[in-house]
Length: 157
Image (cartoon, rainbow, N blue to C red; front, side):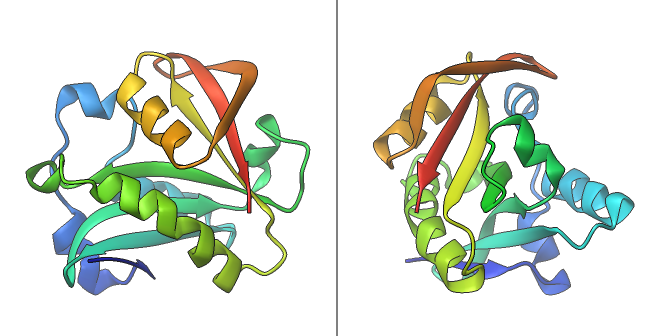
């Protein structure tokens, strides 16, 4: 069973897993994402833990800052960033289940938010296909990210 919850320090040992070099091209480790949030200190970024059967095993952030405006003109949107699942737990549908649950999580915790946006590297076809399966749309908009061309995707909630 998959459950999403705002990150707490007690979750850190469960989300402090090591991603391989390939995965790190496309996402940040939880430690790096948490450091970025602390450094920015905007109060507009919210780390989220993915629990698998009660155990922390995945992570992402919800960013309400201005970075989202590179992907949308909608001020009532949120940028989903740094999604990862513990490599020991990958391949079991956890990412897909979490991406399905994020819609209700955002609706419940951020009433004014009506769109989730994200950027996925063109070479990360596994992630791209996952986002398509859970209802994200890609309409041809791109940008250059740290590892090359990214597809800009969105989902109205």
